[in-house]
Length: 175
Length: 340
Image (cartoon, rainbow over all chains, first blue to last red; front, side):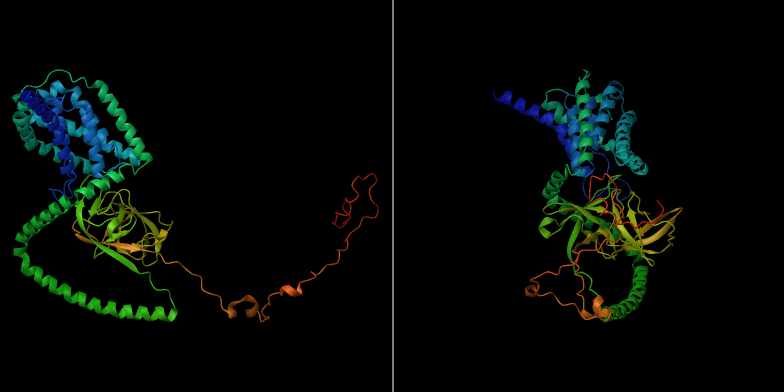
C-alpha cells in the first residue's frame, strides 16, 4: 500500500516537474531586471521546457499546459492577454507536427530544432501584436529575443536533460 | 541537445483535438482582451504585490553587483571624472545663482499681477524594483501603491524629467508605462512658441511628436514640456528636446529610463477655478455712466402695468367674400405694397 502510494506520489511529481519548470521560466523571463542589461530582451525561458517535453514526453506537456503557461506569461508580463498563449500554442503545434523530425536531432541539430520553435513563437507574437495595435512593430526586438532564446537553449537543454534523467524518468520508473 | 540519450515516446500524443481547442481559446482570449483590456489587471497587481519582497531583494542584489562591477572600471578614470565633476559643479553653481534671481523676480511679478500661484504638488518617492525587458513592452514596477496614495494617471519623474505615467496600482506596488512605450500618449507643449502636440511612444528610445498643428516648424533643441491638457498631468514638467529625424520630429528624453532608481510620483490636483468677482465699476450700466438699477419692490407691484391694445397697422378695405375665418384678415399685418 505504501509502495503504491509512493509510486502514485512519484508519478504526480514527475507529471508536475515539466509544468513547474515552465512556470519558473515564466517568472525568470519576467524578473524585473535583465541578465543582459538593456541590450537584449529577456529570453523566453518558458518555451524551453515546453519544447523539450513536447518532444520527449508529450503526455507530460500537453497543448493545454502550453496554453496555460502562455496565459501565465501574459498575466505576469503585462502584455495584452492571449498573445503569448497563442504564440506558445502555435509553436507547440509546429513542434508536435514535426515531432519525428525534431526528436531525431542531436547536438547542433537539436539547437536548430529549438530555434525553429522559438522562431515560430516570436513570429506569431510579432504578427499578433502588430495586428492587435494595427501597425507594424520594429522587428529588431523580436530578432534579439529569438537569438538570445536560441543561444540559451544550449545550457538549458543540459539542465532539462539532467532533470528528465534524474527525476522525471526514475519517478515514473522509466526513461 | 542529446535527445537520443533517453527513450523518446514515439506514440502520437493525440494532441490534434486539444490543439484546435486551445487555439480557439487563445484567439478568444485575445479578442476578449482587446474588448476589455483590464482583464488581467487585478491578477497582475496581486501577483506583483505578492512578489514584492522577492523583487526588492533581487533588485537590491542586482544593483549591488552592478555597482561593484561598475566600480572596477571607475578606478581607472577617477581622476578625469573628478576634474570633470569640479568643472560641472562650478557651472551649476553659476546656474543656481541665476535660477534664484529669476525665481525671486518671478515671485515679484506674480505678486504684481495678482497671478494665481501654481498648484501645490505632493509627491511620493518610490524605488524602481522592476523593469520589463520585452520587445514590445516598456514598463517599470515601483514599490509604492494604493497604500501610499498612488493613483493611475499620475506622472513619474526623476531628477531630470518625466519618465512615464502610472497605469496600474496594486496595494504596495504600481506599474509605470514609460514614455517610450507604444501605448504612451502625452499632451506636450513645445517651447518657445508653446506649440501644442501629442508625444507618442513607438518603442524606440525617442518618442515621436504627433498631431502638431499644420505649418508649425520645430527646431532642433526646442524644449518639450507637459502641457497639462486634460488636467491629469501638471503643466511644465520637462520631458526632453526636439530632434529632427527626416520629416518627423522626435524627442530626446532628459530622463534616463534605464538607470533611474529613485523616482517621484506627482500627485497633481487641479485647483477649482473661481471666476473673479465683478466690481461695481465693471458693470456695464456703471461703465456707461447710468445709475445702477434698483431692484423692484414686491409691495409696489400690486397692479401690473397694462399696455394698451396695439393698433392695427393695416386693415384691408373689404373683407374677402366667403371667408370662413373672420380673424384671417386681422392677422395679416403685412402692408400692401401694391405688387400683388
